[in-house]
Length: 319
Image (tube, rainbow, N blue to C red):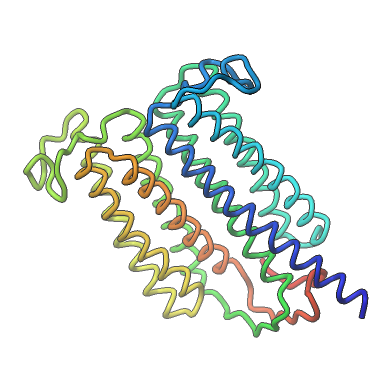
């Protein structure tokens, strides 16, 4: 009985750690967008990991925004490392928890490295867009890690998972990659400073199809790609209901896809207002996390999973 109680307490602590790590990574994502959209990228000058050559610098608004982002990233790094160690130690014989934990840590390190590079050396819009894309994958992998931790430390028994049609797996993977491409294009639009290449929405400079040159062509391409993403996410939600795999997550992804498109309109209407740009980034984060969960479900096999007690040490089979 005493052992069971200790196991349950450990399970609750691990779930709390996973939830805090996931929330922290989303905060890092949004604060990174705040750095970009307030023009605070050089708030600490060309100094890293120090800020203007100091551990605690003299504050201006730009310095405060950039320094706060670095501080939160530092705390989040500790959480990620701790969660990674716990997951690998507890479930080292299982592929899914280990892969997710390693991916979570690797993308955090890559994200930090790209951020440091952006501070120390001038970066192209392409590299800055890559930084946002990596941040998105880092949040999604952290979210999936938290989902796995909560499932494996729960006290509920679950039934068999349905067999997943190969076509559904392929469709989910293709849509995930497509959405990631749309995100990259959108991040490029922002970092290339061409977000207002179309000054209205849903039309572009008063036209259904504007002249496709310069900034206008790039922004219009992003809008068309985003519309395609909304349609594909709706298709995925419909297909997920049919095969009974990840239907709830797919429904959320489709809903967030619509909201993401509307927040893009808000960005244009407010002329890059800070609230609208941060909302746009945050919605993209939760959309991609929901889509990543559908992808995870599509890779899981139909095996009965029975979890007893706190479940911390149980090992359900997943592909």
